[in-house]
Length: 495
Image (cartoon, rainbow, N blue to C red; front, side, top):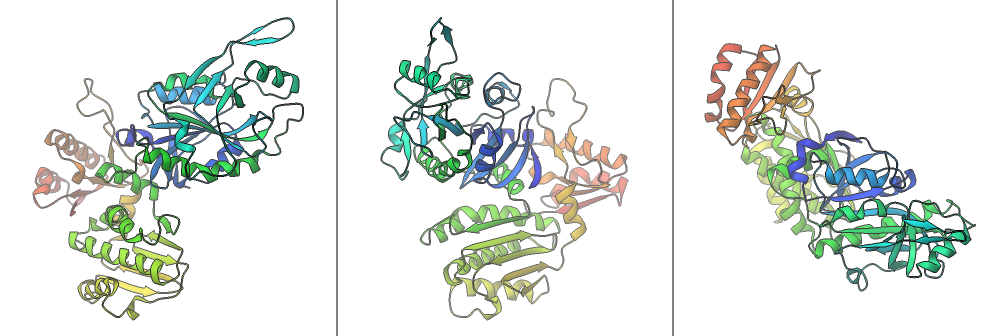
């Protein structure tokens, strides 16, 4: 697991742009977590039974796990409601409640997956001498089930209404009476009644696998096997929601790429599951390239590697990846961004780039890169055991480590606040050297504050590595450079 992501650093990026996945026990949690790529722990303003942020395909997701029901502190209903009403938490563009449920044996069998946009809230009831009378209210999502009837979702999927109440059904008599009063229900569960009415304009679905029939024969033995069906259809459901405008993909703007950079960490993979052969070139050029450039930008903290180098290196890496998938029988490519350079590993045939020939794009990129950077000893290349190793020989590894582990960030809602905040910046206080990025500053009012904060760091005896866009970007800091030399090191970055 990569480092924990702090929510408030990305609140604006996430607001209205992520899918909230919700589960209510450890078995459900484990199954859904297996779906999430590039997962990081996420710090929320409140405690949960687990919270991760990552992606499923090209979609950002946050997965929260709580307890079943609605009354406890860690109940799923309580956690979702806190997400909805806490101003510090970005709002989702859709909510999926996932897990296991009991099924109506007349409509479902074990391992069926139920998709419901229609929840019958049954938690309010009247106890008579001889029976319980359910005072149901119905909540319906704006997502129509018709989207899933003639779709790529096949197999044991059932569409229909679900009951929801805080009761574990282990009695056939209790279940039969409930279904007698509510014959339209094809399944039931224990969480949705506590929060769906608060979703209002936010679309939602309940998707649960039938693990029992809620009677005397109740058992939890089938929960894990039943959830296999959930993990198989969730990506397909998400694509249907995306095609109908409910979900969005990760943006290409700088803030979105910053979040994606944190999610990806130092290592990530591409596989043939991410695209078809026909889509490969489009995927690499139109989508993956912006992410790759953003990752490579962090190597430009030393001015020897300028903007032209970033794009030339990006070009070569994309061509290598394309060749591996198209010609090397590769099904998976692993990229590892180290403090010294980039490694590209494959599970296909061995192929040293030095053996490239012909007139293809890959050969052209390799020859240009070799002439410009390898022959001038700015980069070294080695192929060993299905791994392409590019070493940036002029890279300052110590500075790169500081960028990775000791970067300073501005705390949201502190600049321009009505009341003076005691802390405007945050960083790892165990660091003796820190990295400050001025290239993300576009307003002089914000830069004036940052200049003061940089001076405060220098006064505290810290070594400060400061990234600016150009020689002009040095000007606001020149007086600090003269006063605190050599504790302030200014780096020109082509951002």
